Amino acid sequence: MNLGNDRALWWLFVVPVALLPAYIWYFWRKAGALRLLASNEMLKKINTSVSLKKQIFKALLLVLAFVSIVMALTEPKWNPQPQQIKRQERDIVILLDTSRSMLAEDIKPNRLERSKIAISDLLEMLQGDRISIITFAGNNTVKCPLTQDYAFVRMSLADISTESTSRGGTMIGDAIRKAATEVFDQQSREYKDIILITDGEEHEGQESFPVQAAEKAAQEGVRIIAIGLGDENEGSRIPITAPDGRKSFLMHNGKEVWSKLAGDKLRKIVFPTGGRFLPVGPGETFNLDQIYNDFIATAQKRELESLTMMKYDEKFQIFLALAIGLIICEALISERKKT
Image 1 (spheres, rainbow, N blue to C red):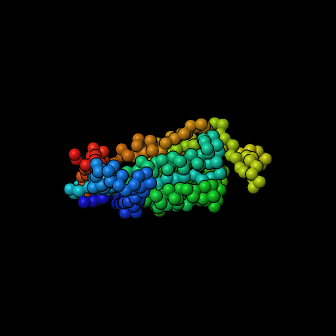
Image 2: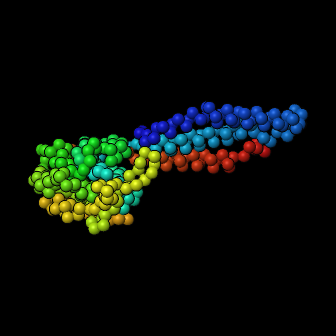
Image 3: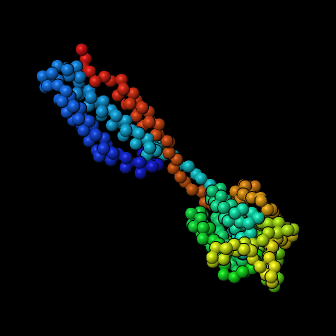
């Protein structure tokens, strides 16, 4: 027999620790109360029709019912049967922009936090795919390598902020090259996706040639899905908070900085890879789990070695039915002696 929840067995300690002492205390208190109401001779006459053995038997039925419920909670299984499970996967690298423009609040609560929420939702949908996260601004950092340990990915995601990279800017091309050459498996030319989440802005003098990087990545079998955040025309201001808690907006050369979505650049990046550009405007939201279902889950996946797993038949119903039967029997049995 296999137990799916063996921790429930701890409840069995309730029987010797609580239930049996409780019944003993109950019978002792009942006898004491009766002695206060009547003399021993009178009690012998009153209790002639009451069976102590039946009272104890009824108590044991309830204890056994409790034990049966605990056994049901352990999720017992038996009759194991071998089952072959085929494993398939794709490799997904998320390139997450952590430049200061991602603090713009045109997408609530801001572009960066909305992106982290979407990535967290994506982790719930992954079906054995390996995933990696690279943060980038003026430089880039591999926050976690390709892994199926989604708990570790969540821990890495929680630590991401605009301080995750040490230099300001938005070097998209460098991040694409990092993913293509250092993160993805170089032995395979297929099953590779990059999810690029950014507003696409690159400052003057910081051109990282992202289109050329995308063309090179496409030759390695990489497909890029770009999520563009922000408005292409008006843009949004970038809030900053002073040490004293006062809120203002980022200034440059005496003017407020407005962050716009560089949609044309992102369209050029995804084109050579056969990917998709998905703009997300002010007040809108996006779901990476839906994007995964539409573009990644349906794509061809790498076949891995099949696993042989044992499949068991669930049998908790037997113990649950036994507990119900014991409770019904306890209710139907009378404490009186047969006359």
